[in-house]
Every structure is written in C-alpha cells, then in structure tokens.
Image 1: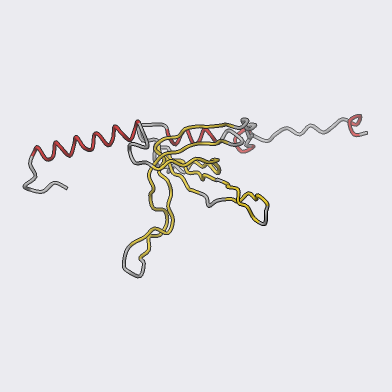
Image 2: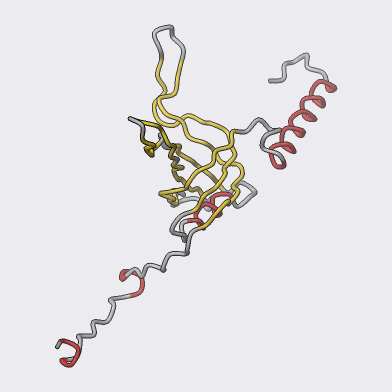
Length: 171
C-alpha cells in the first residue's frame, strides 16, 4: 500500500511487478504459482446472480485411486475438490457450463485456492478455513464422453403431446 513518502519510481516498479504477474497468470499456470488439478468434473451449475450480467459457475472435481487391501487392488474415492469460475475477461465459467452437455469430462484446471464457508480460529489464535475451493483461471479438456440428449423442459416448451398406442401395438 502506498504511503505519503512512496516515490514515483517505487510505484512504477510495483506496477511493472504486477503487470509481470498478470502476464504470467494468463500464459503458464506453473510459472504463475497456480495449483493444477486433474479429474472428472461433475455437478456443473450456473451460480450467477440474477441481478448481474457476469456468468459464474460452480462444479466439483472427483478422483479415485487404487489401494491394496487384503492382497486385492480396490478402488477408493478421494475427497472432492470444489471449483468456482467466473467470466472475467475470459469465458472460463462458460467453458465449464458447456462441459455439462457431456456425460463425462476429464479436465485439468489451474487456479488459486480460496476460502469457502466459515473461517475459524485455532487454539493459538490463528485463523483457518473450514473448507476451500479452487478459483479456476484456466481449463484444459483432456477427454470428453458422449454428448447428452437435450432435456425437454415442459415448462418452457409446453406440454408434450400424448399419443396413445394403437390397439394393434398392444397385442
């Protein structure tokens, strides 16, 4: 934060540093210090506010591993990771929402951890997050399943016509 005795040169140096961080965050996630997660994306939801034009999406990322239990390899579900994305200059949330059209999608997402839910204090007085979610800055599609059939919403498209079977079809 600038103070009264901050020089113009110091402010220009800080601006150059921030511009370099911004340039790195749009090109190479590893160089920008982002976290990268790989898994199947599920429960993709549009969580945009009704009074805003900004598109925001939420989703979860699931993973499994194999563990040897009693001389047998067993599949074990790992804890889920929650994701949040917004269209802030890039259509990241729109990309996530588009993936909802497919039966499954394996993705690599890069971003930064942020708090989610309540923030508590431990016995030494330090604050800690009860939960976390990844603020997605980049989406890379690794594999896609087949596209889902479009769902017809009777509230939007009207009542579906009922065509009773002919008598010849019943027997």
